[in-house]
Length: 116
Length: 112
Image 1: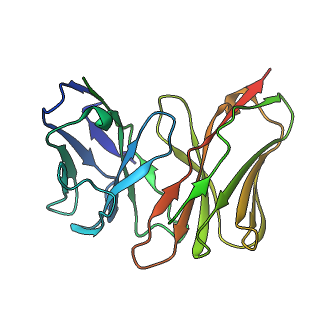
Image 2: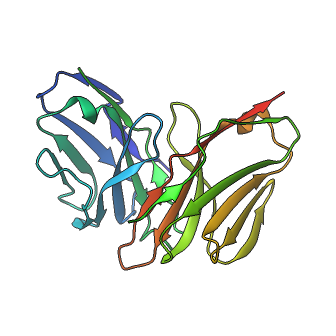
């Protein structure tokens, strides 16, 4: 079974530029998550999709971050414009249904973003 | 405010010893608890989850939960150098679309 795919693996941009990340979850997984992990911190949930609907985006900085999952499969996360403090690893995860019933979240390899 | 607290470490143990990793949480509505392992430069991987008070064992790993004290721990028996990693505690408040809140993680170093 293929795992969660993410691209690119690394990205370096200047502040105020825009950047987009892509995630393809495990086939059949209804729930998709985007996390931000700053060095030395645990992952922080940015947005959670159930199929193609947003169910939690309370910690997404909506003035600069956006995400979509149009067909309920793959997803993109965009930052525009980027700030220095956005330097982090962006992790995508998926689960079969909703986390909380012993349903494991599978993480992708992450995208390491450096904002200069 | 949902908070999950972990000692950042590093926790250093010799090979073969028992490593004890601790986590406290603030939200009494938390109902499921997860331990993830994260190697440096890698993504988190699930080790165990626990819902009920008491102990849950899986191989060399034992998760312990005390909801009254809002405390969850992970014991690693016969620690190996390959267990050296950061261990993330995560909690989930049950709801229709509940989400995971992660702690900062505890770094474990197992010396040969």
